Length: 166
Image (cartoon, rainbow, N blue to C red; front, side):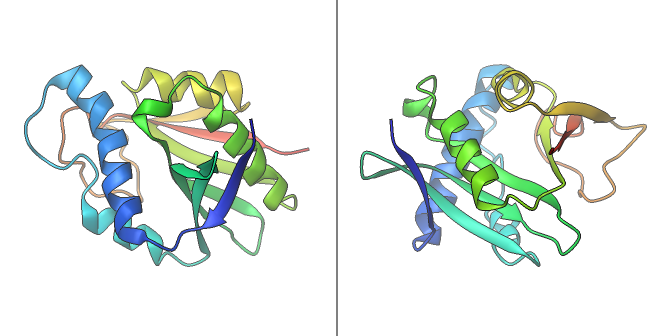
């Protein structure tokens, strides 16, 4: 399999696809309340975050996912958003895409990301496939200082992961 990262040109497509990918896990866990799981405004704000790099994940000439990373001068970087289209899960695309991200930014000292507590696929992916470690658990008694209150079931509970690069 050949997975490549290319700068995102169609941001609308990115938004629609990431919303669909994120919604699947929430609907499976809590049912469909009709709300956007990741609001458009949050994705748009991610596009313009300082140091943001926005990528489509390409496999076989098709867009199969996307990622937004934030690259900082101190090389303590963040995987802000990452998704693989639902119909492409379980094919190694996410792992291959993550490896490409690591290759693109070899100066990175630490990668960090946050994911909801109930998203078992993400927990498996970040820990078992990509080598991240859980370093913090956000909840109503210990809130993520960078997030506004999440407006979906379970959104106030999340793990922060870090990967220290060699």
